[in-house]
Length: 431
Image (cartoon, rainbow, N blue to C red; front, side, top):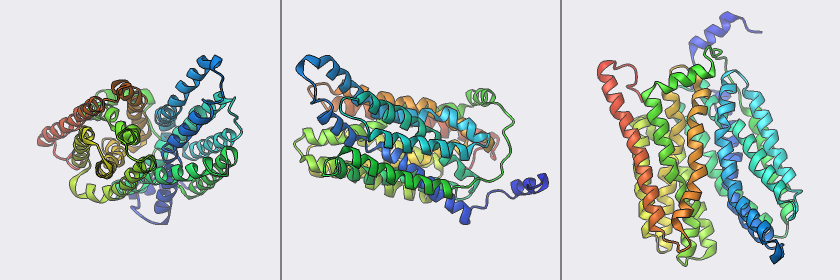
C-alpha cells in the first residue's frame, strides 16, 4: 500500500496529460459512451418494431389496452434518456467518494442483463419490455454516464477538453452503428429474440473491454458533503447561468433529433433515405466531436459553446424551409456538426467551473438533474405543437427561440466573467 507521502507527491505532480494509462482510460470511456447514449439513439428501430408487432396483435375490443401500449412505446425512449442523465444525481457523488469501479461494473451488468432479458419478451408481455429497456437499462446507463466522462479529468489538464471530446464522440459513432445493425437484425431473417441477443453480446463484450481499460488516479477524498456542494452551487452565478442555459437550450436541442426523419417523410421524401438522414446527422456529429477539443484550445470552451448554441438555434428555425432531399442533407450535416460541439463542451465547461475536482461528480449530477427534464419534455411539447395537421413552422420556431434564450444565458456568463476578470484576473480568465 502506498504511503501517505507518495500519495501526496502524486497529487502534487498533477495529471500526466498523456501516457498509456491515460489514453487507455479515454478509449474505455469512449466505449462506455458508444454503448450508452450511442445505444439509446437506436430506439427508433425498436419503436418501429413495437408499433408494428405489439400494436397489431390486439382485437378491436382491446382498444383501451392498445392505446395504453402505444403511449408506453412513445415514453420508453424518453424514460431511458431521462434516467441515463438523471441518475447522475446518485452516481456523481459516489464517483467523488471513490466508487468509480463499482459504478462501472454494476452499471455495465445492468445494461447487459437488461438487453438479454429483453430478448425473452413476447408480444403479450410488453410491460416487461418497458421495465427492462426503459427502467433497468436507463438506470444502468445512468450509473456509468457521468463517471465515465469525469474520470478523464484525473488524467489530463492541458488536453482535458480534447480528451473529453474524444470520449463523447463514442455517442454519435454508436448512433450510426447500432440502428443500422438492429434494423437488419430485427427486420431480417434473424428475428427479434436472436437479434437482440446478438446485439446484447456485442454490447457486453465492448463494456467488458471498457471496464478493463479504465483506470483512476489518487485524488483527495471530498471533505464537503453533497448538501454543502449543492449550497455552494446555489450561490455561484456562473453555475446557475450554465444550468439554466443548458436546460432551456436542450428543450429545443432535441427537436431535430426526434423529428428530422418524420419531417422528411411527411414532405414526400423516400422512407429509406429518411432513415439514413439520422445516420448523416450522426456522421457529422462524430466529426464535430472529434474536432471540438482542438478548436476549443484556441477559442476557449465558453466562447465555442456560445457559437455552437447560437448556430443550433438558427438551424432549428431554418427547418421551416425543409422541402427536399438537398435541404435534408444540408440541415442534417449542419445540425449534426454544431449540435455535437455543444454536447462535447458541456462537461468540460462544468469542469472549468469546478475549483475542487473532488466535487466534480456532485456538480455534474446537480447540473444534469435539471437538463434531464429537457429531454423528457422536448418530444411531447414538440408533438403537441406539431398537431395532427403537421404544421412544422410552429415547433421549429418555438424550439429555435427557446434554444436561443438558452444561448443568451451563456452570453451572460461571458459578461459576468469579463466583469470578474477586471477585478480578479486570475479566477476565470482561462474559460
